[in-house]
Length: 319
Length: 271
Image (tube, rainbow over all chains, first blue to last red; front, top):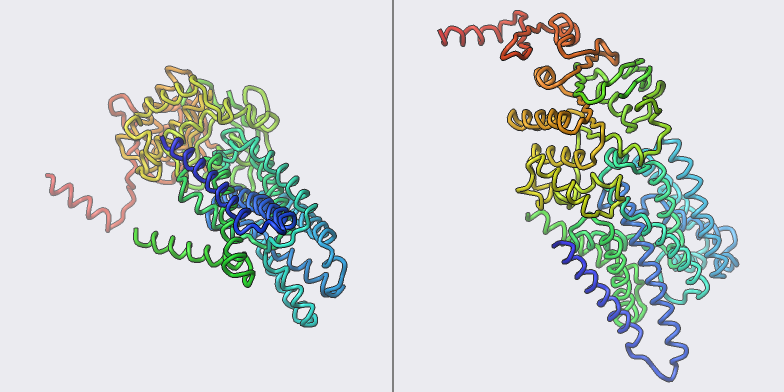
């Protein structure tokens, strides 16, 4: 009964995604510059699908592992490490550094460092902390704070012109993304998606908690460290592609929970991905057509998300 | 048959479970009793691989459980711990369906649905099988979890304080169901239980623990003895035979003015 309702909801969301995506691509299309405009818009849409998927999937899994609906993978400190990498590049090489100016080099360097950071720190710590996820997260918070303090210290020292250029990498942006990077990221995200979807039933079991999961035959500790790695890769590639945008995850996963009212990851994974893509499309349309690129998309998403959470809080407190 | 050989668990300096060796007979109800902090729940967690022991082996029918794959083990032993609070939108039926996960990995067939229905009937949950579990009372929820372990259909069922949150009626009901599982399906049931009278009335064997060690393990009549129980619980316990059951009466006989006056008053009032 509930499943049928949720299936219908998925179909509605899919159609909505297609319609909004179509609107975005076709809106005020200028046939004189069609061969420039169309590929550029298609690139953005593909980027939004890839990033939306990565953020939504990683947040759903992360909240399932931690059994907490207000956490996002950003608590693992990856955003801060990303900003730290960018700051260090400017600090050492200046804003003209090839590591910053060349998208491709910057992407590969950021992604490798982020993945390496997660693998080394979290894989090692996961063993060291005896598989206590929350202890791991506490260490993540401390490392995150450490890196963001270090970044702001360095930002004080660099010259203001360099800082302005650096500032642009502090906000997520879907404009002018290098095409080959889109395909690399898309490939990585798709691979992670296949691994997750192949075994999405065990996510349902993990949501019951460690004791139940072990009782039902899930190799819990190994599964968790595998999932943490998948989350890290997803967050790293998405952040390296467009910049820090983790708040989106919190927003869309909570919306998915509100809409689907189920524990089943089949619905949560697909549903929150669709919602993420829709949110990004709407945000991008607002930045492009309403605000004429005056504000960044992440600002709009943070604003919308903030308002949504205030509404949610007011609604909950009235109950 | 499950054999525990020299199981120990150490937290810091404290040996919570100290060199426990005991055998659990097949097709019986075995109760673990003892005061708080005796190490019963910790021992149960180690026997069911939820917790790694610092030393010792658990042999399930001769095979070391740490050497068998976890998913294979899930078809032989089921464990239900005492604290179960889920913050999930999940219905009674969906939760019980998880009991079939070791066999189906999430894809249920007709036979699985039949087993789930049977578990629901067994625990008399038909009336609210479509309710969300966060809408149930503590006792109803406990019955749902037990139904889930029944749906798991394992030879060995471990329950950590299954009577928590339950009133007398439902406690008796659960214990009768456990006896029925042993009689009708030849299950082996191992429970940690605090109420020694429930242990005395419904178990075949009892293992009594204190300070992380096994004090005595044997048939229930050998364990439910005045001297033994008084040593374990460090209080006066009288055992009376009522309707053929050994019942422990354990209201403290030490002289204490505040309590004794109250009891004496009541005796006078009744006379």
